[in-house]
Amino acid sequence: MKYYSIIFLLFINFAIGQSKLPNLSINNLSNQKINLNETYREDDKIYVFSFWATWCAPCIEELNALNEVYDDWKKDLNIEIIAVSTDDSRTQKRVKPLLNGKGWAFDVLLDTNQDLKRALGIINIPYTIVVKNGEILHIQNGFTPGSEEELYIKLQSL
View 1 (cartoon, rainbow, N blue to C red):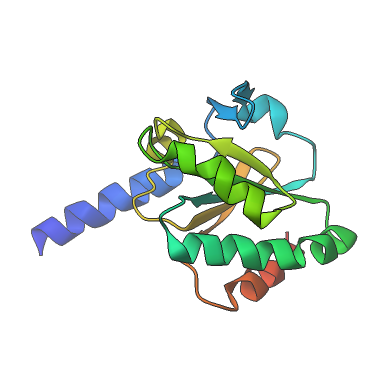
View 2 (cartoon, rainbow, N blue to C red):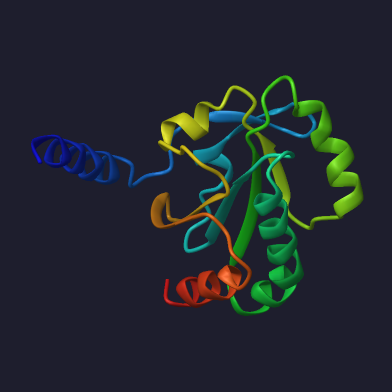
């Protein structure tokens, strides 16, 4: 029981400590460094960061689902979706070919060294965070069909 209490306290401490988007720079598809806090800081805009990898079937399914509803969401919300690839140096070469076949309408960032993933304490993907005014307001771990509808309801309340 003692160990569960320690783990719970560490989890709470981590959750409270990670309420802001980390001040990190990662590459875009053109291999340019993008500072997250400078690029994604428009007041009252909702940023949805979806962490994925080319080898993760539920991740691809989630991004396909988000792509299908993205235009409708943009009509109702001031929103931007950013797909953050967590592919490492071995699998990163698969990202651009996969994107060419998908035609996703959102920006893609490359977290090749997984610095952002580590800073946020992400263990499993797909993993989605919702950021507004630099604050992380919602976290969604995993994907099942229909999760995008639940996410939209949450986004409407922000």
